[in-house]
Image (tube, rainbow, N blue to C red; front, side):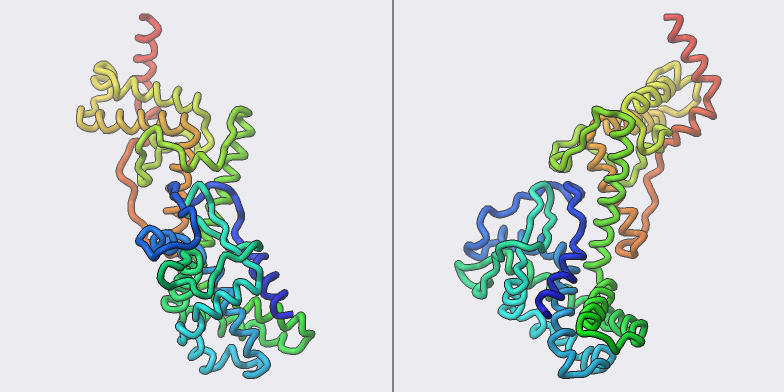
Length: 359
């Protein structure tokens, strides 16, 4: 019962598999096992940061299930429980952790287009001799490292989350074995939800949802728009800055088509990219040069699907991490407000348009 309840609890909460919303492309090692080298350690640590939330929920649920009858139903609200969470080495002991993952038939799935990693059902790659000599298993190291990081950094937050959830669920203490299993699973989920790893996972989930919605809207407007997971590993057509809103630079919305970006960019470049336009707008060359660079970058970015999706992902991630308290907000670099410029220089743009039409 415990195994089935834990497996159902964990797999029901795996992140969405929207391809490609992870970070820049990363080449995973070809083999699971080898000498303990810096590349294998780096791969393990990269995978671990994406596993913290899942490993936290799995081990916390295991702890709750294993001692529920022995300690009594009030144990999650006790000092003894908080002390148990502080025993990180015991909670994350390699042998017990590998056995737990194997018993639940969980494997490590790697995203080929990013450094994202997930636990899912499959052939377990774990080894009880995972962290020694030439038999170093970097995937097992990733799970172990994720567990240590989750409980070392978030033990107090986990205990507080479980305590709060326990109080909220206190009226459900009596019930069937199935109900009690569900209750313990919910305690584990809500306890880990306060950790940095789980907040980061929420950010990635919300990011995936937002990018998928934008892709659908762009595809509805442009039938030739066909996003692919490999977009996030493609070379960039332009080096962008995540702290610049290139849609704002052009004065278009975030589902603008390439044709709209080119039209608006061309209009504004007639002000900032030509001698006559600069003279009419009265903008000093130093500012006009900066505006021209941003306008050209914005046009290139919005007209290259892969680069645009990478930019949307990177900028969106920053905004979500700020919203979830994972990093402090920093102001955008000052840049052109395209929509405001079109209104402010309406007469000048009309004059430049008339001059072009006479040529």
